[in-house]
Image 1 (cartoon, rainbow, N blue to C red):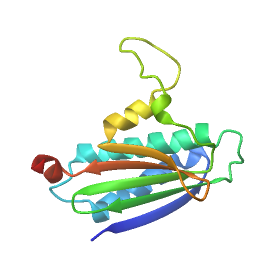
Image 2 (cartoon, rainbow, N blue to C red):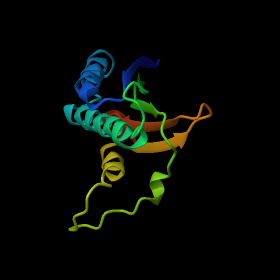
Image 3 (cartoon, rainbow, N blue to C red):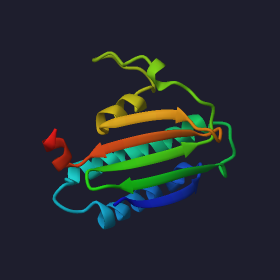
Length: 146
């Protein structure tokens, strides 16, 4: 049985703490137990922060701060999914060049960080002209079963 919660916030970095606290409460109620480690929940919360800040800084750059960002958390027995909808211009993150190890550059690490924090990450344009970032993490039991 899936458990879901939804949050809508303005495109404003000052609400990041609210977003992360909301997700922590979701996890306390729906993802607690032996199948989820503290490290996995921390990784998901970090991925949520990265996805949210990318939406504010990049997708909504130039849009009013009142522009909504919608976030949904869903928990099944074997996985947690986060969905972040933005209203910016679409882009293809697969076209971003992978950072070379040992080199420094300004920006461009967010997509690669997301892929390392989660088991699956997608970013697609939806039919209602929004973009949806999907972040999936599988439970310890699901990972051990593979």
